[in-house]
Image 1 (spheres, rainbow, N blue to C red):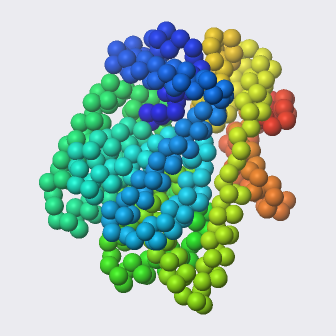
Image 2 (tube, rainbow, N blue to C red):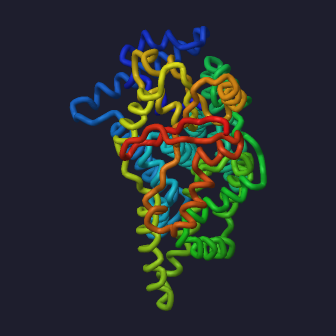
Image 3 (cartoon, rainbow, N blue to C red):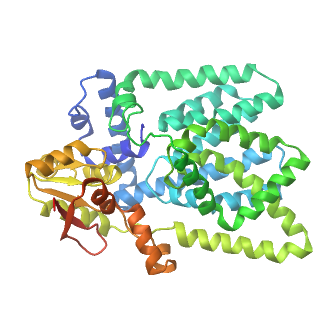
Length: 441
C-alpha cells in the first residue's frame, strides 16, 4: 500500500528528508527516488502549515477532512450528472456525510479519504465522457491502495448501460499506464514489503469476513437500513440503473468482502451508491404524510447516533503515553503491538531513531515465530495494547457486553489465546496505552 499520509508523516517527522530517504533499507534507485519525493512532499506541507501553529497530528487529520469534503462535493456533481434531482442528491449527501466510515475516515490520518475522492473523481470524469481523466484518477486511486482497482465495476456497469466500449478501453489503457509507471519503481515493496500483497497475512478469504462486512453495513447505516430496502424497491420499479451500479461494484469488491473488514472501510467507494439508493427511500418517506414524521425522526437519530459512535476526538495523550512507555521498556527488549501502532510509533519516535527503536524490537502478532523465539530465549517481551474503548462502548454497553467487546477486539486476549502467555501490567499513563510484561506461565 502506497500510503499517502505515511509519506507525509515521514517528511514531517524525520527532519532532513533527503538524508533519511537514502537511509532506507532498499538499494533500488527507483524506490529511493520515490521515497525522496514522498519525504519532500511532507516537508513542504509541514512548512506550509507551520504558520498556523497546528501540531502534526492535527494537520494530517485536517487533510483527511478536506479530502473527504472534496469527495462529498464530487458525489453531488456525480448524482446530478447521472440525472438525479437536487432534492434526492441533497439527501444522498446527508446520508453519505453521516455514514459511520465516512465520519471515521474524515477524522483520521489515513489514506481512504484520498482514495474515495479519487474514486468519485474517476466516476464523474467517466460519466462526463472524459475517459482519459477517469483513467488518471483510477490509476492514482489504485496507487493509493491496491483495492482502488475494484472500482472498475462502476465503469463496467456504465459501459453495459451506454454500449460504448471505446471510452472503457481508453480508461483501461490510461489507468494502466499511470499505475504501472509507478509500480515499476516500487514493485518490490508493493508485493513483498511489510504489507505487500504477496506476504500480508491478513489477506485470507473466509465466509466470516463476508459476515463481518455485512455487519459493517449495519453499523454504518443503522437507522437508514429500512430506507435502503425501500430505495432498492423504488430503484427496481423506476429503472434499474442504480441497482446495476451497486451490483457491479459489489461483484468486483467480492475479493475485499471475503478478505478484509475494518468497519467496511475497504468498501468505501461503494458508499456514494448506497447513499443515493437510501436517499430514494428517504424522499419517498418524506413525501407521504403517514411516514413523514417517522422519516424525520429516523434522520435525526441517524445523524446523532453516527456522531456518538464514530467521532472520536484525537487525544495527544496517546502519543505521549506511547513514547513514555517505550522509554520505560529496557533496551534489548521486544515490544508486541498491532501493525498500525508499530508504524505509528516508528513515526512518533522521530530521529535519531536508534535512541529508541533500534535498541528495542517492534513486533506485531503476525510475527508469531519471532515472538515465540523471544519467549524461549528469555528476551524481555512486552505488549503495548492497541485497543481502546470508544465513547459509545463506554456509554452504551452493559458490563458483560463491554467485556465481550474487549475479548473480541483487544490485542492481549488474542495473545493469551494464541501463545498461552501471562501478562503483568508494566506501565500506563492517563489517556495512553497500557504496557504489559509477557511471560510463560
